[in-house]
Image (cartoon, rainbow, N blue to C red; front, top):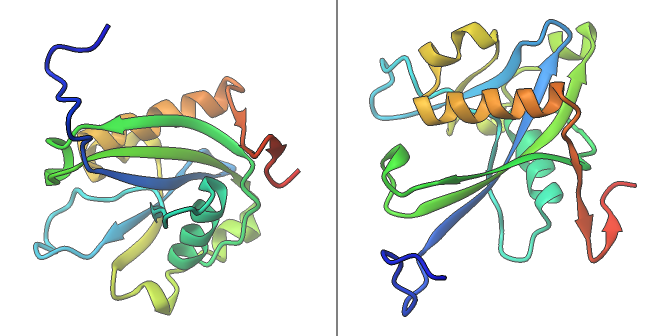
Length: 171
């Protein structure tokens, strides 16, 4: 049965993003701060990741964006969640679909080596390890909820393997 408020004549424009949940051994979340016109705004931190190119596999897009924004090279094979973001959230005119992938847990040396690459400085102002207790302070409400849900999926072992044409990605 179709939803009464959905117009099936013209499919909606969608933003498809692949983002990555990476944790350190203390459970802190790796987050990035995009540059915005209002740089004094405290909220706006998000998971590393970005838009997918047409025809690009989800895991490839997530790994590409993670490398570009944090310098981290990770083999991404597991999905933690898919999150639909209505157009009204985040001030955009298009609804979004966010694939949240498991970037694993970094050891102390790996975590300490994470820095903002020079190539990302035009788009991002910072990369930091954020304690989960600060998510509401630093992330927009829908992003904080998304991050908490992905972290719970990780903690409860609810990772789903990623497949491409029936073959395990990175397997």
